[in-house]
Length: 608
Image 1: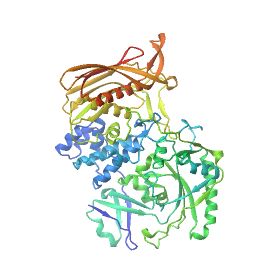
Image 2: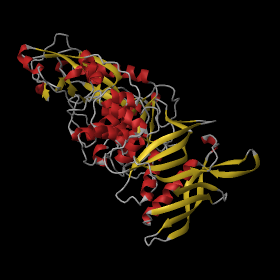
Image 3: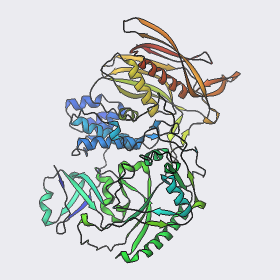
Image 4: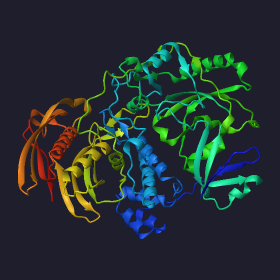
């Protein structure tokens, strides 16, 4: 049962967050021994991949989403994925980064929360992934940043005409906590600025009720809590990261032929100097409007405090320090890495509002002037047009592919094909804090990982191995972008029937990115499949793509030859499989890929 805490002048509740219990994680079997599950729950967990089953089992120790509606859990799944996934410099979705473990675990929890309820409703990609932009947005005209990215900078994403006004005049239109943005842009429109809404389990709270509310303390499992600001406040929001994804995110709904209406990025290279100028401009702003306000104002700056509205531990600061409230932002916006400048009334500690929360006095938006900022900033403009779509990339968002790339299978029913693969790790993904477009590559050597797992849900037609293969390649491309697929075996799960296998024959000695060149490459695919009349058919098809190559010789001797990269091979295979699907080839038996230039076999696939 959930009950709202209603704020009244004569009825109060003092809330504290109980300290989190430290629990030993243990392995999957040890966790199962410590919780009570039905046989169907155990079978479902055992059918998951190793990484997923551990996270799902841990959720049963503390089912904090127990009283959250199914619709809200689906939206939660969307924003968890949208925070782990990003748009890479290769203009594709990727989840290969060092910041995704938190999101993977929470996604497994949310998926398990739906599975416990036997929820079978499909999850709409476009609805739940509203925080993840389509790949069709225009990327920057300038690929890299001009400054030393080791220094901490601030970034402002907005229409170019507003950015030029900000850079040349220092003219800022302040938002208010009460500002309601009518645009259908989920990046800007957070309705929880003046009222923070939480739903927390009673077991994580220590609540002292006044006598008027004492009856609420008994037999309540969860509480809907509203934390109201005592006053409105002004703010100016920037980001601490450079990320193409934010150009697509903040540019939603701004399609226009006018270049000034496109979204760019203002890079503030000297944040300390910007803070000084903001303080000076805010002081003049407050002096000009002093007659309107009853209290003195405080000017502060800092990172946004992101909180999970269902997790008491993450919400603890909201109850402990009222000064953090203007910086509080729901966890779903974490990807923005927001940095705020806040101008708020400096209220006495014993201040008690004489108005109800709904009647809080609203401030009006107004301009702040900082002066010329061109000496401490520059603008990264967007390109001329959006990139061309390519069929072997995800042209649109797909919640199932993106979840599988994070190691979580959303579907709870139907047969699954488990791909167990080996990968050569050549790229660590996103590791730079200020510049999230910079992926880190190994210049020498690499790490090989084996027994990695991806589950692909089979369509109703189990004979359609081409679709399963396409889905695996697409999921691998998102999860391991920049890394090399060496081999895989696939079997029906949990029955264990072997289905197919694959091996790549390219050398594992690709050079650093500086020695890899973009070029047109061609691959010959020789395949065998069963047609609709049961006859075995052999075919040969040439696939040409815009790929990457490098010069090398065999074992350090002989003439230099031009070799295709692993990423080019995977792109070609994805395009070949897509053509097979378009030609309605279901019973694919085998294929091998040969380099048209070298005449050498690069990979081979066969059905068991």
